[in-house]
Image (cartoon, rainbow, N blue to C red; front, top):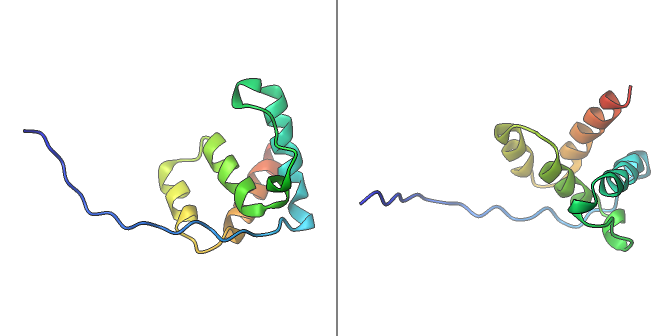
Length: 95
């Protein structure tokens, strides 16, 4: 009958994490992307831009990161590793 079954393990969301000052450029660049591509919506003007977990999740939704890398990052218990990864990508693309 073509029915597929699988076992899943729910992964907890990252805990709310304040965006460290050295990663503020990720929030600023994200707002620039929202401005360049209005079909994404508008850049929020609330506390979400101060949260590293939210910023990282949005970038992972938007960037063409391969699924394996994305899943590896999302399996982490916090967004710190993702911040470093994204910062490297964004800094590299701006040079």
